Each structure stands twice: as structure tokens, then as C-alpha cells.
Length: 503
Image (cartoon, rainbow, N blue to C red):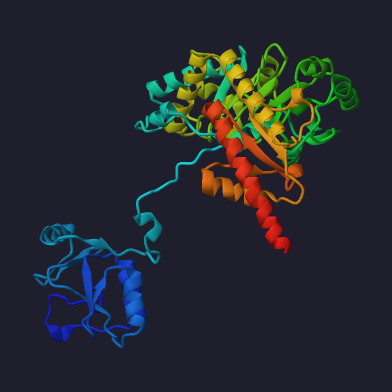
């Protein structure tokens, strides 16, 4: 029979009544298909969703809760009732007949949460100039690629794109490593994948402590059961080969972690010679190039680097979320001869390497996860742009823009956090805050008046610096001039705010 509280095919005298709570539960259980209901007590028309009905009945004295408007239909498992004909049916056939007579229908399910009002409005985003430490803006070519319809993650066309990305990454990293690919993650995922693949629980790792990324590496390693030792350095100062070898010879780690581009300080660490030292003592060298690849000279094979990862969203100019990574033959051997499986399946290169066809090209590619097709398109086009411009030309462009920017800062009296010019990053510059000036007014003013993104310090530089990035498509002379003007005005504004607060 139809649920109690609804008109059935029998006479009106046979209608049953039920308490509000029981009627509401009946509606939720029924998964009814209706468009509108009316309160039998006050005849108010109600939307057919549980929240609307419940809110109305809180203030209504009706014991019989709702009835159907004429011409609508309610469907209950094994029973269909059509209010226009008053007929009931015990099969889906009646439901189809009733549905043909009804217009728009809504579904009452076990839903108590309404569609968010925020999502019922069109998406509107500001067009900003991303001159912080990253991400940087994407080129029109990359944005156009992101508009394309998605492909399946095992389509042959997708595999072709992945092969093209591998070739582009070998060029960008300057390596012939077979195990070169991109993982579905940000740069943090690259760091954790690097550590988790080449190190096993109980093994030791040496981390050069030069900034926040060393701290993150130590956190990740500790969670994986890896013993961590630190080589302490003066923050904002590059270390030398002698002190590096002293630390490696003392700890004799299975792997050493070094950051090439410490974006929290704007520091570039020279890498030549480090690989030879690490290999001399039987270890592997892991290098972070998130804020430098494509903008600073880098030679993975020539410098003896065993694991290198980078960010897609900085100098390369693709969206974040797809992280390039490469493993040397020695690192690959370590992965394939592990005593225990890689602890995190998502980062397991024995799977990912096969999915990216890095080992034996005759082996079928397994399903590991569903890669983002649009991010693949974006990274492919970003690498294509780098190949067309040429690495040497990209390095020179970033160097020229960085020099112009740093000279402009010097003329204005700004001090840089990294004192040695040869150790300053070409991509991210850390500028010391003037005395008595806070970062937030500068950041806010630059965004509000110039549409420019600036960033404060991070980790050890928090509250001490403003960080500005000129990389990828934003590494131009025009962007450097715009940033200098915006910085001048923003600092003046911040100083005025400070004066007012002191009065």
C-alpha cells in the first residue's frame, strides 16, 4: 500500500494520519520522485526536499504531513502512486506511465544538505601577476593546452604524450636516466618519493640544513623510519666542498639531501663536486631543484646526481600538481634490489616506472593510478616551449632579468638576504625588510594597487624578508620594471602605516 499520510486509490475516508517525525522518515525512506508537495493542514506549497518540509512542519500543527499536488507522482519501492489518476501499481510499469504525465521532477532522498549557494554562481577569478616564490603564470600556449578534452590514462595517445614528457625532462635535467618521469603530486611529493624509494627503514640519511626544505625532508624521513643526521650550515650562505666531505665522511650516509634552490632565502647552492664526494663514501645524492630547473644551469649526469626532482609550476611554467623526477642507474638499482617494498604504494617507482615505460619497452604498462590528463597536456607544452627556446637561452634570459632586478634594488638601497652575488638565485630574491616595516602591508598594497603577488619570508626568514620571483614567462625586463615600481610604492605605504601606528 502507499505510505501512510499520502492519498491512495481508496476513498478519502480511508486516509491515514501519522506524526510529523514518522512522515518525514517515510519520505526519506521512500526515495520519492515528486515535483511539489502541499501541507494538508495549511495548504502551503513546499519544495520537495527534506529540509524544506522539515522546516515547515516545525511550525505547523498538521499531524498528516504532506500530500501530492494533482498530476505529480511518488515512487516507492514496489509501489507507484500517481495522484492524477489515483491509481496504484506494484511494478515499475506504473512509474513509467506516471512519469510521462509529469513535468519537472525532483528526487527526495536521504538528503539534508542543500546545494551550496556558492556553487550556483559562475566561476570568476582575478587575473593576477604571480611574482612571488611560485607558482608563476602559465603562458597562453600552456593555458590553451589545459582547455583540451581529457584522454583516458591508458589511451595510446596519452602514452605518447608521456613518452614526449620523458624526453623533455631528460633534456631539462640534462640526463640519460631511463627512470625519468613525472608523478601526480606537488614538489613535496617529489621529495617524499625520492626519500622513500632509495632509502629503507633503519638506514641513515644526511641532510644539509640550509632552510625549510631540509626541515621538511627530515620530517618525511623520520615518518619512514629513516635515521637522520644534519650538516649544519650558516643560513643564507652556501657551503663548501671541504666541510661537506667532513660531514659525509663522519656519518657515511646511504643518501645525502641537498637543496639547489633554497627559495625561503633566495640561495643557490653550487653542486659541482658533491656527487663525487657522496659516491666516494657509498651514498646517493638527492637534489631539490624545485625553484631552479629551467632557469639555472643544471647537469644531472655530469654532476653525479642520483635523484633529482623539480616543480612544474615555477620556471617551467606549468600548473602545479605534476612533479618531474629522475633516478640515476645507481638509484634505480637500489630501488629494484630493496629488501622491503617501497612503504608508500603511490610513490613506488617499481610501479610508476612501468606505467611510464621506463624499464623494458616490451613490457605492458600496468594501471597504477589515474593521471590528470590536463596536467600532462600542460607539462608537455611547457617542456615544448623550453625545448624551442633552448636551455642556454632560458638560462641567459633569467640571468639577465635577475641582474637587472638586483641592480635596481641596489640603486634604491634595498639589501638582499644572500650577501654573495654568485650564490643568489636567478628566480627568487629575498629582500630584507627596511627597519620598522612589516611585510603584510607591502604584500597587501602590491596586490591591491599593482595586481602583483609578493610573499613574506618562510621558515627562518619569516618576518625578515619580502620574497619576489621572476621566472618562466614572468622573467622579462618589463616585469622587473613593474615589480620595482610596485615595491617602491608598497614600501612607502608600509612606512606610512607604521608611522600612524606609532602616533
